Every structure is written in C-alpha cells, then in structure tokens.
Image 1: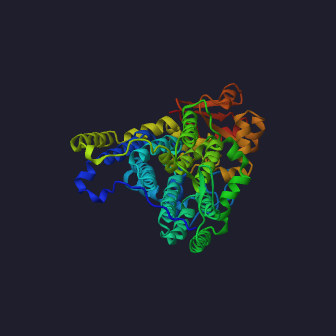
Image 2: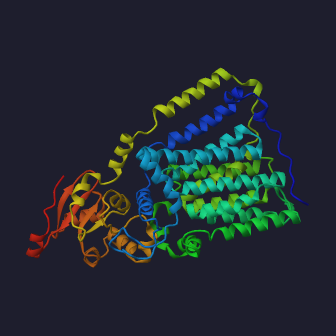
Image 3: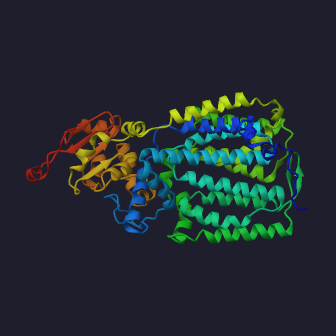
Length: 509
C-alpha cells in the first residue's frame, strides 16, 4: 500500500489578514522562540575554530587556490591537509570584513534562528499544533545550545532542516521536489562533514518504507514502486553529487577518517565526550529522554517507523558524543510535538491583538537594545585569549618555537600572520603526525623535558592554572617573561652565551 496520509486539520495563516497574522498568538510563539535563541546565543565568540576559518578564507581570496597543506604550524608545516569546511568559512570571513566581530556574531545568530525557525515550521507541518510545536522547539533549543557560536556546523544543520522538510512533504503528500536533494548534497559536502549524518537520515527514511506492518503503537507503510524509484534515483544522484568538490574522493572519505582514524581527537576533545548527567546539559538530556519515554507510554500517537529510527539514531549519537545533542533535538522535535498533542489547540477567536503586539514589541526591543557590540565581543575575546601578550609574541623571530595552548593556536595565527603555532584546533593533521599525542603527554607531564627538547621549544604560552605551567614555574631552566590574567609566557634559559647575545630582549607588557 502506498504511503498516503491526510494532513491534520490546522489553522492556515493565509486565510486571515496579514496584520492579524502578525498580531496573532502563533506570531507571539514565533517571537518568543526566536528571542529565546537570541538570549542564549548572544554572548561571546566561544568557538576557537573561527580564527583559522577566517584565515583559511583570507588565504583563499589572496591565493585563489584551496589549501592542500598545512601553512600555519612549525610542527606539521607542509604536511598534506584538506579543508572540509571551506565554503562555510567564506560567509564568516565576508561578515568579518564588513562588520568586524559583530558581523561574525550576527551571522551565527542568523543561522541558529534559521535552524529553529525551520524546525518550528517542520513541527507545525507535521502536527498542525502550533503550541506543541513551540514546546518541542524549546526543548530542541536547550539541547542545541551545545553548539551555539560561530560554527560551520550550523550550515550543515540548515541543510538537514531543508532535507527534513522535503522528506516530510514527500511522506505526507506522496510528491515533493526530490530533485533538490542532489544539489543540496553538493552544497552540503562543501560546507561541512555533517552531510554523512544527513545521508544516514535519508537512508532511515527510505528504508522505513520498504516494509509494512503494525507492532503495537509502531506502524510502517510500504512505498509504492514509483516512490521507490523516485527515492532511489534521488539518493543515487545525491551520492554522486558528493564528488563535486575541490578535493574529490578525499573529502568524501573525510568523515570516515574522523570516525575511524582520529581516536585521540574523539577521546580527548571536549565536544566529543559523552553526556555528563551531573551537569545542567546532562539534566536537559535526561528530560529529553523522559519526554520521549513518557510520551511513548501515555500518548495515543502512533510512532511511524522512520520516527523511531530518527530518535534512536539521535539519542545514541547525542548520549555518546555531547556535540550531537543538537542533532537529537532536531530529529526528535516533530515526534515530541506529536506526543504533546494533548496541549489545548490554538483558538484564533481568543486572540488579543493589542496584548500580542505589546509582547512582540517588548521582545523586539530586548533584541535591539541587547544586541552584542564590537566592544562587548572584543572584551569577551580578551577574557578567552592571550591578547595581552600579542605584541611580545610578534617581536619574536619566526625561528623561535613557541608551545602554545591548544585553544589559542588559531587565534594567535590569525592575529600574527607570521606566527607558527605548535598546535591548533585543526586536530586531524596534528593527530596523524603524532603532535597531538605529544601535546596530550605534556598536559599530563609525561616526559615533558624530552618532548620540549624534541620540538626545540624555546617559549611556552599557557594558562596560569595548568599543571605544565606549575611545573615550569618551579623549573630552574625556565623563566617567566610575562604573567597576566589569561596567560603566562615562559622562556627557556639559554646556556650558550652566543645565543643569548643574538636573541632580542623580550618585552614585558
């Protein structure tokens, strides 16, 4: 039997005048959702990757060629490297060129708003229940806050929302513009490696229609032969479109390299850690699981097979790797909205346009008056990065090797183009060369002298509270050139008098 379901009876906005739509309760819910996103995401530039993303785009515009080797470090300089997010970096760079730090922040806010605006629309299209859809989106926003910031993965989630909207239309109406999927994947692979997750979601959707049956509250309906052909052609074309990129098959294989060959990256970088149920985000994840569990027990909603597949995929990834809480929120939101269908429906006749207008105006005023400025963002950068020692680092000869803190590498290279870092958050190239292992050993004080000598380290730039900082403070071979609130700069005491005469005298800030 072909899949064909009637859309739920819904309030259709087009049936009411435009002004009444803008002053309706659903408009208030949209404004509240958008303002909540803004309130959570408006502060800081917390992603350390943004700096080398900006630098990559600057290099692309200057050289008119894609990066194919490391040019930023002294540890792996010249080693083959591909840039899997080159296209997503360009909008951030252009925003920075025009508006500075505010441009970067505004673009990230716009992307996050687009994701949750699209998700709210998807939930409403799926359920016809605007209140339940808003509640589901609020839960997704809390989960997604793990990736709020100027991140390239936001472009990937925009692509995922676009795919889910296309697939939902195909499920509910038996026809949809599936021809959009191949160009979407062509765009997606050049934006971010999350295209591989989208392909798994597509496989779950297609596979769920290859069987038919009912198992309690779980149902599955088989695709018609025509639908199978359409989905098959769209999927095959989408896979073929992945190879339209500047790095060819290597970019297609990149997600598999990360999954199977970057063990240190996945085991030591914070966003790849599993959920800690003792912190706030872990408790939100537990709330998410509880909503799904209680909904399955108490709701009359029948789970479609692809919904179960989405939820199992999202929950597994999010509980295993905290960064995918965002993904789980997106995939589960339409189902959560269905499970919350007992919430009273929106009734247009109860609208209070003047009250709605007042609420919307208040929310808009909050966004306008609290929008981050360049000064506020610069202050947040000063709190997170060693801006206080930049001039001193810039005075060092390029031949001097500086061991930098992992999170600062991209920023230092962006601010001092001649600076060569020890490591930065482009983890893959450093892991494959063994540099990441050396850095992790230094953090744990495993043979630090041997590793520092191996890389001929003359300066160390680390935060005050690190074990390595404490060890160097008590090592007679090292002296402190600068100490500030954010960083401490150590210099190795030279025993060769000729080297001491040759080097410039470091300046304390």
